[in-house]
Length: 147
Image 1 (cartoon, rainbow, N blue to C red):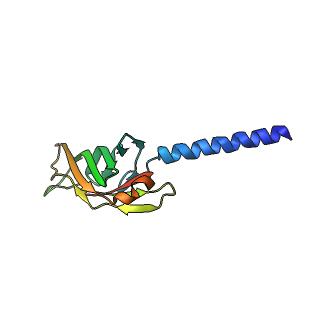
Image 2 (image 1 turned 180 degrees about the horizontal axis):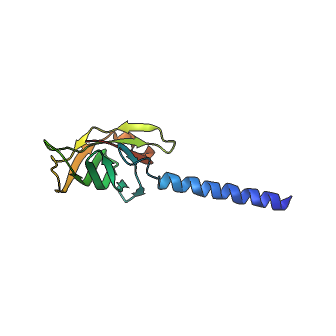
Image 3 (image 1 turned 90 degrees about the horizontal axis):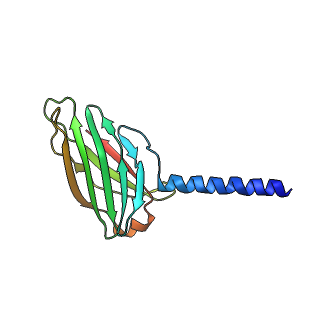
């Protein structure tokens, strides 16, 4: 009986550790029109979230990095490019700020890259805001992108 209890406690502890890792480091939801942050963390005065490569059609983003500050300010930077366009492409991103239960607590406005042309990478930074009252609830971020 003690062996079963001990094994049960080990399994429950392992499941709790696994759930904690998923909350602190969620996997990518999908490459393409939306992607969950691949890595995240908390610094002294902000939370950060990063994305690996995302693509929508001929458009691509790499090195996406979002910082959310407790006062409701945000900074997003990334590098974008397109492989083909006739009139110039623009990468459009907005962010769903989710709590640990994956419920959206706030959706940001849309942030745009510079106009992109083939074979040229565009590194840019945008500033924005979100509702500061949701800062402490934010555990995950999903980036929704269009081109």
